[in-house]
Image (tube, rainbow, N blue to C red; front, side, top):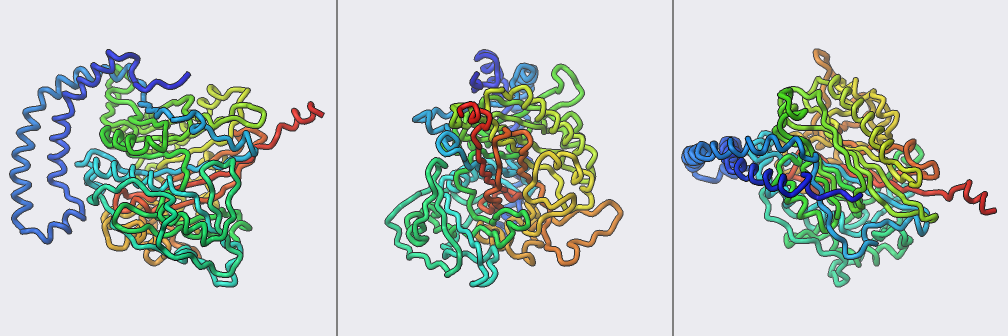
Length: 590
């Protein structure tokens, strides 16, 4: 049965909820603006240097008086709204569902398995810090509503471009290819940040580009332009022709051009069980499922939904529980939802949410937990349904609390198993089982040793992990230092891309590992690169998918497109899944 859009059982209850929230919202907004008035981002502080020194104190003084009076005036209405709103949470389903009706049912179905027996799936995850504006400023990020709209436009711009991949199989004839060496020429950069004007929708595939053709070094390099549908064979046209016909797909509004797609770095790493990877100034093309964390603000979630729905027709947002949990108890009150947000190109067949009961302190004010979903991919050659399982989570944040996070990982493992056991049908093939999100621990900090050795990593494979406490040498940390978000080296996607590719610069802006309490830490070890804290993960599991499916990692991507808009580096993963024909059925046909 298809999911219902409203989280409430009927329209009457939904209407009562809307009335209650409408009474709460003005008071909440005035309080939010009151907090934001006293907390400035480093970008706003630098902009005020050019203003008269007395203007900001006057703004704070008179703004405080006005907002405080309005807050007091609306507080009685908010209290009445709360009395109506809070009890209704007991009958609320823990997520909202938006479905965009496609122009054709075929647009939601992947026919790769049906036609050629294989398919490629793209996943991406990002922590957006879309808290109410006053609270987000404590993370050096403001303008939550504007950031939400801009982030949505940037994501759509990235995922809608053609999937151009450049491989260098044998770069020895032209020297070692580093991530900063692009085979294709880079365009002009554009300015990004939370205060930039909103971008226009992307312009794709204009054949009348005036830029010149591309010269490729004479190595065993080749360009592959993947179509959106895996049922078509990749094109092997000459590189210059392919790139020239798609150059405007990397344009950004009216402010300039995006840098050209960079070479995926293999450099013989396949021999070391390492996939091709890149640092990209754009989101990976043709992402199928997008997992976002810290989308706590309801209005920001709706702005994201509006921006993403033309591309991702199935969206789960406002995920989580509110008020007293469990219902009718006073043990824990949830002021915020889980912050989880999932956007999928594929229809969502089933979805389930669980909240972590072991949070403490300020982290317990949010209903962090796990969202599991089952999506319909299409059919295979035997007209058997093909589905996928996707899981998104956000773990406990404070440092030095490894026991709490390990308990939450135990819950995640159990909940995923229960969901799949209840919703996996015998007449279905499972193509993928993916778990992603912000785990709030890394694989290099001595303080996170307990989580690094959790049994979850024996079930799910991490493409970036060499072992407990050891990252693969090409990995890049995903947690940025908040005070430096608007520094000149990282305030645009192109600048952040170049910074991440250079170790001596990267260590200035990526958060360093956390030492064990009371112990000195030497990082990195001798002859090892400086990586930093990677707390955003995309994991996949092969033991739970159909036996006739084989999975291969196509690429791993670290994305800089949201420079100045969040304090995390988004991560992308693309999997190739080949579905073999059923051997027993073949023997029956002989």
